[in-house]
Image (cartoon, rainbow, N blue to C red; front, top):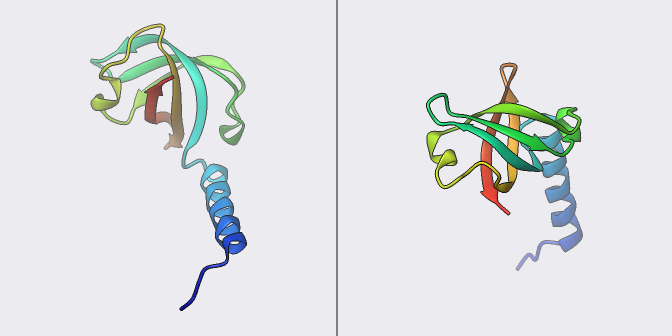
Length: 98
């Protein structure tokens, strides 16, 4: 029976996560919801720096990946979110309240 070596498995996981972040697939940050535009599926967030997307801390509007992401959120909520750049547009792919 072959047992995977933990070091090799951890190294593979770290490499995969690093490649995903480096390619702009998804990046996580803390933020605060400043505005919700459900009709346009947009969130304005004041957020920490997102180094993997080469973004300083700022307040910015993002497109939501789906309308379902906006459900249960309110202005003022502290959140953790994931974003990626798609065709020149920053998109929220996941979000949850802190």
